[in-house]
Image (cartoon, rainbow, N blue to C red):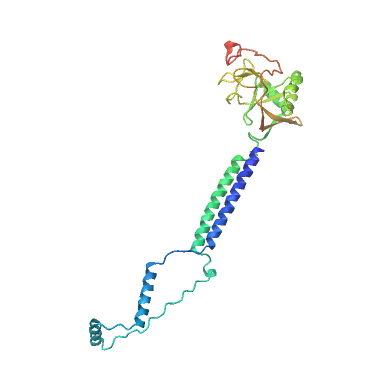
Length: 294
């Protein structure tokens, strides 16, 4: 449920950012563009103003201009044509926007928006994919482990222990005689498998998270990292662990064990011992101290 709210929050933030960005790009599209005139435009304006001024005020002809006119007449046999009035500049008529689609400003703004939108989409998809619960039957989802009868047979063949790597879980046989005490110590999601005769434990040690292996000689779980020890039901027998091994929520449907590896339930408190099992042989960890060394 927490993962769902995180995914929803991320999606809301991504949508809000996209809306804000779209609004900003839209405002920039309709804003009037401002800038400075090019040098050539300024020079043409100055030349036009000078020509207009010369047509209004008749300036005296210099001697150099008279000599130049006479030389041109001797060479070409004609006279120099003079322009009385400068042609007025053409009036600028803006083109119809429909004739060219979009302006360069709009093209750049929309291109930037498209890049930002693509980046936000990729980011949102990545976050959702990372936080979305796995639906492929792996760890973090409900796993159909198998029929209870077959699992009990596998546990016996494994010397009292069965490890399921796809669920990161240990399975052991649970004695029916211990059920009255188990009903006082465990919640319904844990009791479902215990009533079917199977205990299901998370592989991690509650102390610092090491993977807890079985000890075939003592018939306990014994952590090699710091020496915590647990009986076959995952109830603490020694070491620094703050509680017994954690559990998963379980169901038994039609004789098939289903384990919800997305729902971890804290292990039983120190002192819980529903089965009364003691070490059945030498301990793999802390054997010299009778199995209770830390």
